[in-house]
Image (tube, rainbow, N blue to C red; front, side):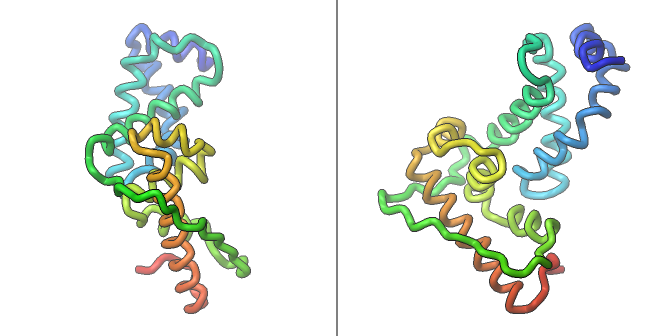
Length: 181
């Protein structure tokens, strides 16, 4: 079945079409969930919740733009919704720290190590870091998505970068860029 046929099948509540769409998109959408979740188990839960939303709202998809992009946006919003209202974001004053620049001279830094230290960031820093650096949202867009000020997004991004820089430098001192056990 083509993607379009799967979408129409899901609109008609065809469980076979839903299963095929899930199999088609779940690997990519799981990586989105993993990026924004605290851990693997939470990412699995967020993926399941997100697919329920996708199947419930699939009738709203109007075939303008990418279906995968539409589904990704639902996944991101699903995860972010769980953090809205929880006071995970720091209230900051107007002084925003200079952005930390992380330079990695050693080519031995693994993607696994980088993803692990990003995932270890506190919620407020991880969410802002991923939205800004990984997904390219502006501070204004992030502030609207998370219902916080742009100053808070800038501060949380700077602090996330500082934490990551410290962890990378600490590992560089050890000569070991694999995730700590």
